Amino acid sequence: MKIFVSLLFCIASALAFKGKYTEWPVSLDMSCEPSSSDVDCTFDFVNVAGEDYYLLMRNTPLEGLLSPFIAVYHKGRRLEYEGKLIHRRPPTKDEYILLKAGEKVSATVHINDVFTLIHDGGYTIEYIKPLMVLQEEIKMPTEVKINSATYIYLDNARKVSLPRKEVGLRSKGSVTIESCTTANGFIARRFPSQSSKLGSILDPLADKCLISVLYISLTIVNLIPLPLTFLIISRDLMLVGGSFYLRYVTLPPPRTWRRYWDVERSGLQITPNLLGKANTALQLMLVGITMLSPLLDCIDQQLLKLLWFTVGTTTIASGMSYCVQLKGFQIIKKRHLK
Image (cartoon, rainbow, N blue to C red; front, top):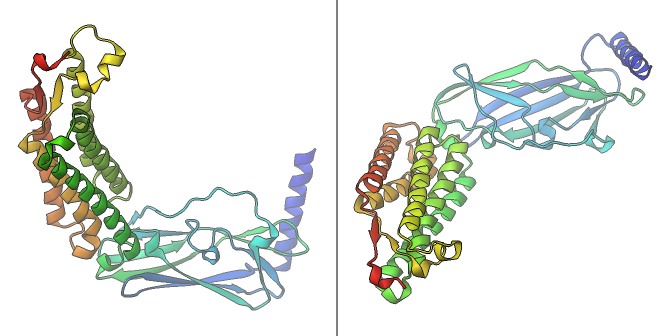
């Protein structure tokens, strides 16, 4: 019975709305224009009806870039939305803005903040979210479907591919971490008293964690291909698993849980070979160049693809050298064990 009454109310509201107006009460005019470092899109919402309406700001540019209200296409392929996705409760009255008869409200956003525009050429920008309008005497909002699209052409897409501020912050954080890692290795080699068995284990493990986090992050934003990230992480997991296994087989009886994790009793010392060091350096170099690629004009260029191939090849080669030749592991003489 409740469902039937609700259905009748919806039908009556729709008929009242349709009978009073022969066209949508709110129209949208949108225009996009590339600037020196952004793609600015302006949206004009106009009340074309003869009376006041309330327009829901949610899922519109009136609240900023908090929802995917537009779709961007390049050569027929829809680009991935990289902005926020917020799950919210039903809207309240303060989320509506009053549009008086004939009044216009506008908003301008930089769409390159939520879409990665890395290729030169034409882009189609389409408004995809319906507007929600409300009359004060009708308590239920009505959907207004918008069919609006515009076209832009970018001849220097690298300038607007990523927000400059984000690139700078990410690069700064990565350089700081890599500098600390380099300094840690230098101190351990220069001052033997500062090195330890625990450090020889934690240092390569920290490098692997750092590289994994960086590559996963850059893969999520489509700057590094997924197969390369999968290859690097798989190789590191294989090496870590191999080191745990060798730790077990080199541990003299009795093999207990406590003795297994006692690094002072360890008969295993990890010594990376030259190929492994070169691979780590190339991986970090690729991360740095990738984060700076919007500024260095090497997005989707042969240089970046060559680095992908080189890193992938050295990753496979170094993994094979560790697993087949076992040159990355050195067994300490048993006389040092208690």
